[in-house]
Image 1 (cartoon, rainbow, N blue to C red):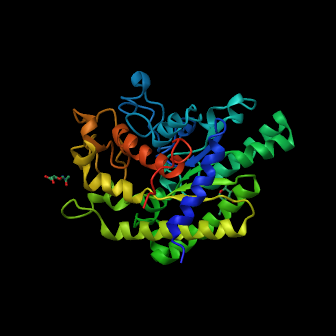
Image 2 (cartoon, rainbow, N blue to C red):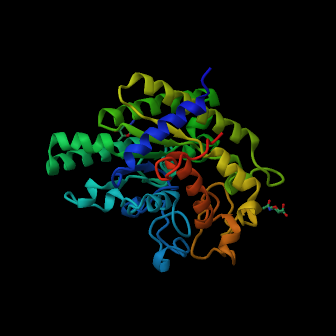
Image 3 (cartoon, rainbow, N blue to C red):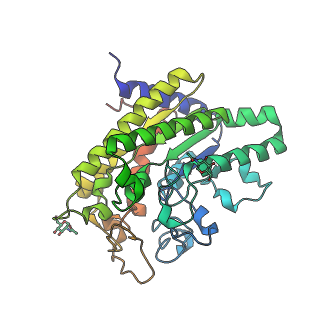
Length: 354
Ligand SMILES: *[C@@H]1O[C@H](CO)[C@@H](O)[C@H](O)[C@H]1NC(C)=O
Ligand SMILES: *[C@@H]1O[C@H](CO)[C@@H](O)[C@H](O)[C@H]1NC(C)=O
């Protein structure tokens, strides 16, 4: 019997060998963990971070719309690939050269489902992000023609990180309709069937090398811990997230069999994030059960200008109630990068990840 992990790993290796030939074009889809400024363009969005103390450790110390004190995991992975972090889609003009080298569609508050994060008023859901990608394709075609466009899109890497908000800002909020209407099994079926359409749509638009980054142990983020009596992780939430991850993993194996030349893969970051939270000191951190900004609530939870920051941000895994610090993102980016790209960037074969 072939182990799932082995199959996924083989797929990941295939991505890499082609990616290493030239600077890879990357298209990023996601939520606040990868947003690099799209939500700044939404006047009424409540999922914004373009104010202090966000960006306090970013180049120039300025808030950019990233939901952390420094860089996102995506920024760090781009720099490890030797490419600039793709710019926010909403910042680009019709004929921007950046359209040819990679675009970031991620939007804070976004989910797989359209109704996720509804109380943020404005955000790009995954469907919206794919619509933006479709417009990108038209613009690229106008620039370089049909054939070169198909080639560019077939060879590009698609990094997707979504699902966290479908839990934190949807199913786990008891007052919202999805939480009242569905059991977890039903909600999970809805997520997976929606995701199936979204993967297929990306494929039809030309995406082949798709990496889906699994959801982390959400039961252990500060906004969830505050709901437990003693500040511990919410076990049920972590069980649900793991069920989601394993369904996506299975779905990806199925899609690879059904869609010719598809190279979808699943980057399972759950164990890496959990280990960082459970053993912070082995990574040089001191605190992982509360946020540096000390804003641990289940709605809100952002680091506001009047929040009191911790004095040593490198001691903390979490920056606000939802998002890791720059220091934690470095640890996580290294692990995710190793999962996705390790083989091609080292002269000798890397040791097996098992
Ligand atoms: C979600 O909204 C977008 C437009 O904002 C729309 O194109 C899409 O069909 C919607 N998806 C569903 C499942 O209703
Ligand atoms: C975090 O953990 C420390 C040490 O284990 C404990 O003293 C502290 O009360 C915890 N904080 C929260 C907010 O749970």
